[in-house]
Structure formats: structure tokens, C-alpha cells
Length: 215
Length: 350
Image (cartoon, rainbow over all chains, first blue to last red; front, top):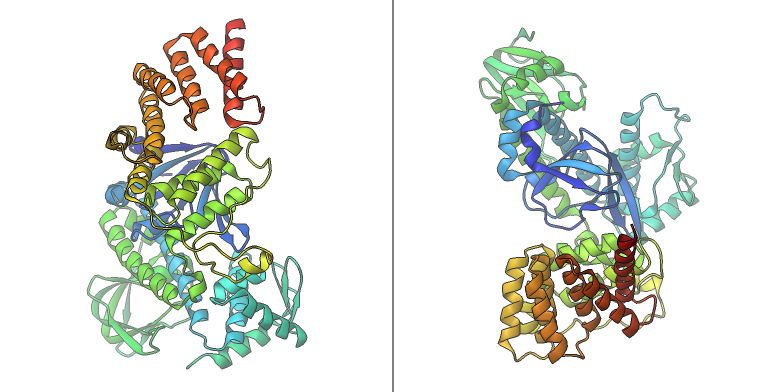
């Protein structure tokens, strides 16, 4: 961990349950967790979803360095949390003095760029069925990254997602996604459950999506 | 230690799709990065400048390369493994900052491209989104979260479409928090919001709901300045808030916001720890406006002010007065007075 003693004036303390920032709030600062855990949530439809649980020395709220875009998620203190709060004005000072943090931020940006590009690939598909299928391919790729050694049952893949989640990534309405999933289900390409969706042959989806992608 | 490597013209340093942990710096010759623009589908060639790093992003994250690195003229490059690069970069903060800026520009660009392609259903304005987030918390009895969000709403949009509703919801959240605590008590009906629903399911969820109310009338000037002051108060800018409330009070005229401002003027004084002035202001209010809708809270602040000044007996007197005036044990001010009284009595015993 980098030496952050000089930055104590940027320290903020939050009690368990306290909101650090809310989704849609304009943001101009980002945070470095020093102690405690921070939960990142987003309200999707009628449910508040936990996207991530972060702990020291992770960084969050970093998108705010880009421009005054509204927060895309809510950050809540899960325990008693201590963070260092930085903004664009003191960003460079922090980075100059702490290359380790700068490197961490760089990796985070690299990941974000890849994630966004992958999302973009989905959205550029004109065929709505292909879009839905591509969401599952994207999820399969991230799952593979998380644990390459995870047991995969042949070509079958299981996803802990809801129709709302898929609709969000596909940039489509839940109704449209629901209809497409029902169609896939009739074709026996997917199985729909309350808490998960099973794709029976991920390679079939992969072939289907590439056949629909513009070359 | 990074190694020096040489490449012949027309050879390839890496291919799109390769996964590797190598990062390069061009030292001699000419190298170009060839990739397909994801938006236009056109081929793009980016010439690498002398001394420039390439392959950084994919190596750092162990992602597939996004481009072909083609050698145009015989080239010499320095090859770093990721740990070597990290070590080098740690000693050269300027380089990291430069790269961070490049990355953040790329991120900004792709972010915007994604946003542009998202269906309109996702495009909730930040104002509407913030308000709906608050409503969600309120409905789900997460009062302290609701309190935070509506407070923020008033901070950013003091004259917003939902400023008045947010102020009401904020109050409801505060009351419920005191009365029941987070996660308890009945869900608070938030009613229809003036923002268009993003998904039609809002209607499905409640098929018997009356049609949505039309947008509320635009705020009057008096209301705007009042919510502006409330916004300052919620940002803990009590001094500024005090000035604004004073101006509204002294402006007279407005029968609705004048008395509200008078009450909040006192609260601001209290927050600024001006207890004598708080007592003076509220005592006068009790005499001139005995039917003020916030009378119980005025008495509560009088009690608190006396307590702060160390006059426990007078403080107790005000708390008891509240308990006798408002006998509903679930009333927020009743609860607050009861708690304050109890802690004073326990303090005396202990």
C-alpha cells in the first residue's frame, strides 16, 4: 500500500448503512477505501441489485474523474468505512505522489474500456435475437475470466441473471427480451428459471451471433 | 530488465486476439497499429511515435490484443513484462499520468458511444433518476437512504420539478426514521411522480391506480427561493441558509413560505449554535403565531436550546409541554421529546 499519511485531510468516515453517493447524483470525486467494505448497488426495475462489494485498497467512483457525469450506481458503507476522497483538482497531486494508485487506476480504466467495448459490440447488432444471445456470450466470457477452472458442463452455461438484467445489457425493453427468451425456450435453446437462465449450447449462440454480425 | 528486440519490415509484433503480458516501446523504425473502428467498421492505422508505449492496456488486463502491430520499416523495440513495466512506471509518475489521460479519453469516448446506442428507456434524466431512487428507498422503508437522496435532490435541484414533493418525502423519511427506524413501519406511498415512467410496467404494477397527475404547476418565485434556502440548509451551509430564510421572512407577502421560512430561520440559528438567538426567535414566534403548523417542533428546539445552555429544568419543561400537547405516542415530535426528556432524567440519576 502506498504511503497515504500525507492525505489524511481527505479522509472521510461513513457509518454502516450510510450512503456515500447515490445513483444519478452528479459526481466530482472518487474514493480509495482504507478500511471497511463498500457495497455498490443499482436499482434495476423494482429491485436494488448489488453489483459489487469492494474492500481496501480498492477504488470506486473513478468515472467522476472523466467529467461531471451522473453516478451510475449507489455506494453504501457496509461496515464502518474509512475512505480518502479525491477530486479532479487534487487528482494529479495524488497520482504523482502515489504511482501505485495510478497503476491501479490504469488497470481499472483498462478493464472499463474493455467492458464498454464489449457492451458496444452487443448494441451494434441489428438483430434483436442476436443481441440477446450476445449478452449471454459476454456473460460467459466474464465468467470464464473470473474462474477459468470453474466446472463447465460441456456446452451448457448457467447464468444468475434476470430478464431485467439481460434487457439492460441488450439495450432493449424487458418485454422484448422476455418475448425473445420465450422463443428461445420454445426452440429448447434456453431454460428459464426464477433466479437463473440456462443456455443449453453456448457454441450454438456463438455461431448464431457471428452469422448476424456485419463484416 | 526490459529486453531489446528487432523486427524486420512487414513483420508483425503481435496479432489481434493474441493474449500476452508484453508491453513495447518504439526505439527505432516505424510501427503502425491496424484495427477496425467499432463504430464505422473502417480500417484505422495509427502510427506509433518514437518513444511511445503500445500494447499496454491489453497486457495489463491480460485481454486479447485489439489490433495488429505491423512493422512498416525495420524497427527496434524495448519489451517489458508487466512487472517490469510497473516498476518502470512507478519511478516515472509523469508517464503514468500521461497514460491515464489517454485511457480516460478512450473510456470517455466508448462510454459516450455506448450511451448513444442505448434505448431511450434507459435515458432517464439525472434529475428524474435521483428522484426515483429516493422514491424507491422510501417505498422500501429504507428511510435513511431516502433521506439522503431527497436531501441531495433538493441540493442539486432546489427549483426542480419535484422540489416540493422531495421536501415532503424528506420529511416523511425523517419522521419514519424516528418513529419506526430503518426497515420498519409501513411503506410510504409515494404516489405518481411527474416524471414519465421509463417502462410501461409502472402501469402494470398498479392497474387500478388513477391516471397520473399532470405536472405540478411551476414553482412560484417565493417557493423557489424557499427551496433554494432549504437546499443550502441540507448542504449544511447554515449561514447562507439563514440569510435566505431571513430575506423570505422579511419580504413578508407570501402567506405560505413566510411562516415556513420563519421556522427554518430558527433551525438555522440552532445549527449555528446561536442558542440565545434561537430562544429569542422562537419565543417570539410562539407568542405571535401560536397556531404555527410547526409549533411542536418549535417547542422542541426551545427545549434543545435550553438544554445546550445547561438549563435542564427549562428544557424538561418544554419537553413535558410537547408530551401534554401531543399525546399520540407515535408522533415524531412526541417521540423526540420523550427521548430527550428520558435522557435528561437518566442523566440526573446517573
